[in-house]
Length: 219
Image 1 (tube, one colour):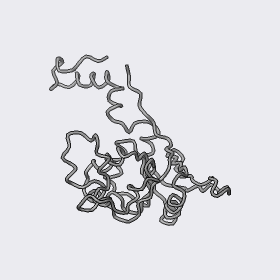
Image 2 (cartoon, rainbow, N blue to C red; image 1 turned 90 degrees about the vertical axis):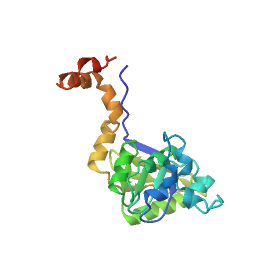
Image 3 (cartoon, helix red, strand yellow; image 1 turned 60 degrees about the vertical axis):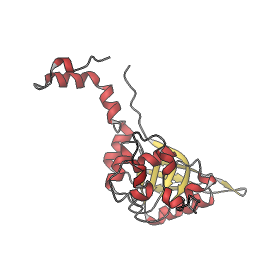
Image 4 (cartoon, rainbow, N blue to C red; image 1 turned 180 degrees about the horizontal axis):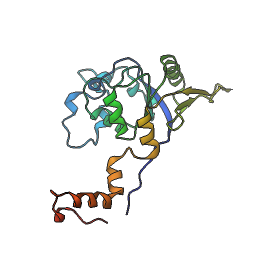
């Protein structure tokens, strides 16, 4: 059976604001948690040293707040994900439950590692990000819609204290290569190879240094 390739045209969910510029991958997932065989369970260690002191007492951090517990849209500031290229950083965020990250700017390798997981990294101006973070802080149950295809972020249109609030639409930016990969469903290279298994096998058989018996039978 040919595996279905997932497209990521839009992501919606509640938000969690993590403020600060130049939050690096060591802050997102400390190095001592990288010694794992698989990425399973890595989510519980996201922002660990920002969330707990040396005695494992909780500190003031959005990821420790119950009101943000089910959030799936992370809202950050500039140069998020800088530092080392460890893919464990987006893995930890994704396994925490983050499906999209909206911020002022991202480190290039971090954004690439997010793409490999189908997690869009969407940028907007500092003023728009601050307004979104403030909105999320005041309305933790409010829905945010990240539209990758149309490069917009929408929020608001909620009822606050009996008063309907107006929807805000941000003209955001998604790197064109990332947008194309997500919308067309070519971000998952493993699924892409599986869906074209016979073509891959045919190419392998045509290579002079690959013996036919080493090419497995295709379903």
